[in-house]
Image (tube, rainbow, N blue to C red; front, side):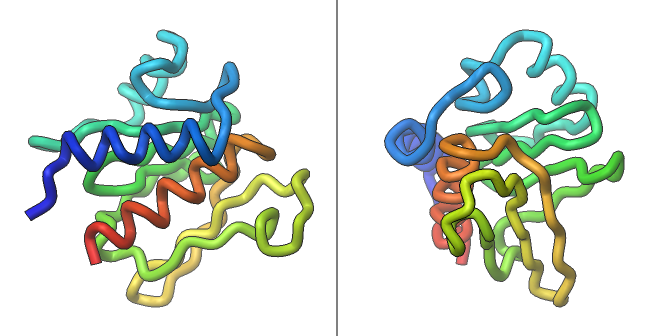
Length: 139
């Protein structure tokens, strides 16, 4: 069984090491109040679930990782998937070295592919690392 508090703490530490907080992206509890308010209107936490990191580009493009799932809004459409349903997480920015790229690619077990816009640069790298860690924790 997964200890959610330990997982959240480990992922927050990983984000800080591998990425970087900005005004729009970072550890969920440390985000500006207006960004947390926007996210809390867009999705609800489930029983026992803890928010970890988030990136908000605008109200139609954001991503939140929790201990149990990834939730995101891509072009105004909000979706979420438990990590047990995420088959892979990719970032073209990390794969080809172009730090200007801003999409995280989430592949789910049924073959669907989603490109989710997040803040480019260090925040993207940190979020990508956290997503991969969470995917491994639940597989």
